[in-house]
Image (cartoon, rainbow, N blue to C red; front, side, top):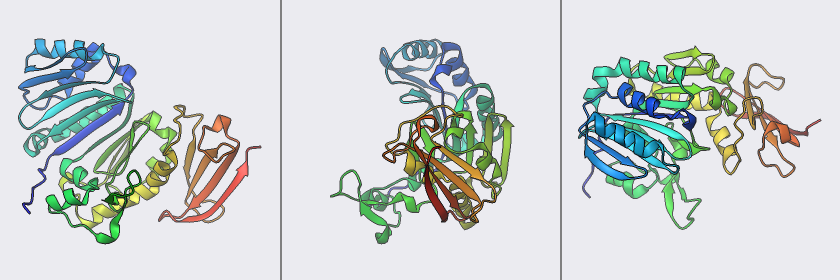
Length: 327
């Protein structure tokens, strides 16, 4: 079998409030995140077109997309790099860069993401190796073999959606992703969190994480975490350990599991899940509170009939759990 190589590069994306989309804002983002010289503009909205890049064609593409009520896509690109604005269940800004382009502008790119979270309603954002992000989330064993990746037979499971199909359980990978409620839950090199993300993972729990190179509060509503110094050192054992440590400290996988088939309530004062850090009565260093209805489904705090409290140790092991009715 011929082995295909996964090309290395950088992935940056930001999920944000679609109410921030306007002609002026979109044009600003297309300028601010333009770290390459585009040759084409592509848009899919009221009309579809792929045309030679010019400021005039970019303006036309913005007009054709942002006034469209359904899902749309706006993209500028050259042969190796691209910048996309996509509206689906959320608004998503995605920047894909080759290594050379990223290395030339790395500090400016990081600052530009910072400014986005300070100036707009960013929910969550990441910067990481596009190659590693791809590898960490491949579940098809045939594709894994095609790319020369080892397939651990003990990690093969039946696909929950199609039980006759065998897949690789990506839960074994420290960089695997969950996409729920239009948001991302995972662990990678650089991560930004905005106010609305705190509905799911408490700001205190994120700020308390210290097994990283950097954890800074950009503002009252924004946090940036960088797990390790060099973006390209993702496969070092100590950095894989940091990915796992972050998942456990922020209860990423516990939150994702509870959010499956759960309605979303966008209100920090009325969460469906609360995560607290500290020293608790039964020896835990993290406390998770799930708000439930009479059938045990996760609901917002305001309408909950019961709540389940769990205490976890530093490794994410549940030490104590109790379910009680709301008084």
